[in-house]
Amino acid sequence: MDTAADVKSVDREIAIDAKPETVWELLVNPSEMIRWMGQSATVDLRRGGAYRVQVIPGNAASGEFVEIDAPHRLVYTWGWEGNANVPPGSTTLVFELVPAGKGTLLRFSHRDLPSAEAATSHAHGWSHYFERLVATAAGGEPGPDPWITGPMAKS
Amino acid sequence: MDAALKAIAEPRRRQILALVRAEELSAGEIAAQFDISRPAISQHLTVLKEAGLVRERREGTRRLYRAVPQALGELRRFLEDFWDERLATLKHEAERKERSKHGYRR
Image (cartoon, rainbow over all chains, first blue to last red; front, side, top):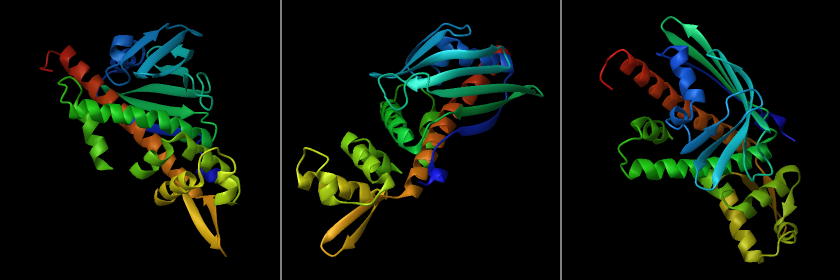
């Protein structure tokens, strides 16, 4: 078994020209959350509280909050409803917001992805998400931003 | 990568991929696991092969198939692309919000 190919985590660091408080709102406030992820969201923002994001029709991601330390650190579990390989609660998202001047350094990590096989299935759900994004962008809906089409054009 | 995504969008192809991850199997051995026709299996194998997810090897008249480990690395890149896009949108929205807070035009 080639474990090197196994997907265990995805880690990113990005600089954002906005205060941690501003970024925090986008992470935990349902109406703000859907600006960058999903169509609708329900959030019970407390430790052990549940959230659910309708990513596309028929595909919802959900999980529970593990750590809430506004506006510094947010940890919640993540998985796809109805997906046996990556069920809700099976993987973990970690957002760390580090003040950097007037902005924020966001450290992001998607952890506990169990195996490449499961990731294959996970990617399946996400490929639908992409199709949806492409359709939305192509449909010329005024709201969604060019950032969605921009990075996609690169591949 | 597009081809790989399309290839794994079909549940049977994901099952085939899972079968040949750990061991090399002939088309017949793979077909025996499914209740669909042999030609249908061959077609799925062709799609997987063209997507670079499985490798075909001939041994006499038999064709043997095995998953390409590096191709699963492609999936890793897909996941990374997914989050890159989400995080880029998050950054964009946060910065737009920050500017509007300071009275700039959105």
